[in-house]
Length: 432
Ligand SMILES: *Cc1c(COP(=O)(O)O)cnc(C)c1O
Image 1 (tube, rainbow, N blue to C red):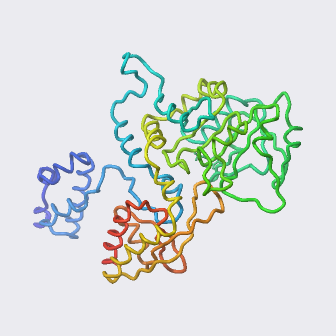
Image 2: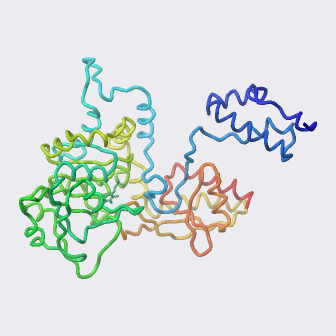
């Protein structure tokens, strides 16, 4: 062994460094040990001196025990599936933290007996959608559809328009999901036009239900026809409507986007929706509607395999009862508000000699909601070299490239993260 190698501090000695004792409490012994041995290797290879090892270990410690890194979503896509869709409200985050311990999720603290799981959330959900007699929550909208298909149409037929055979994303297709449950698809109509008669003629003794799927990620224009929920509800079959985005009541700023209240009032038997799209909550699937049908789904054996955890129940309840979730605030921010935010950041940044300009931008809801809707927005335009450096920052900042510049769209950034965005740009400005 060379002299230099002998001078490299040993593992036990390093782990006793007070800074690393703290880190072990925070990150766990195994993780800190791994960092220590990695840094010792760097010293053995001569990349750093033995004396630099303790500080190098501290510098190399990851900020958290979990590898999932926080991201400021400056893409302009409000619900970015790759970035985890809806960010939770502070109230929902609090609820998740509370629920992380032991909680009365299935226990009545008055009587000391077992209680209905998630009753607090179900109360909140039914209060938010009075048109629903009953509600059930599963892991996501795909699970809600799979449960409905299994419980109501296994070995039977689901009647579905050819214009609503939707691929959700990542190669997953709703028709394949439905047939995987043992239900058969009875396709009716054409890609662009389906009439009430097409549905009526397909109904028969083998019908499990009629399904209407909101085309949430594409638009068909031109010579088109689809049948309204109200007309479909008059047919002699249960009607399940997948509204996609999870709007609970109409939103004037999202014309044409279906909502649970209106869909149920128009006569749907069941509505299915995602919790982490326009509703702005955690990933989950909502089933709302007729009491007897909801109960059939809830009692089906497969329902247990799709049960949501206490963290989801807590986050969804706080989303429904608490302050307006970030997704809704981002959606409804005015052009003036966005410009004002850009202007105040700009004043600070230009004084630091950063090559930054405010530019008009076009944001979108993304994530299966309001397809084709353009949301006027404001972005900070930076040199392209910022893109990689900002992604490497903690928290990472992800924007989008346009005409050789990096655009950081402010509509998809909750205003309370403006200072985080600003700090990241300032830090990165010194590197690019
Ligand atoms: C997004 C979407 C789904 C899938 O929802 P998940 O919650 O991601 O499973 C299904 N149907 C429609 C119409 C959608 O928009």
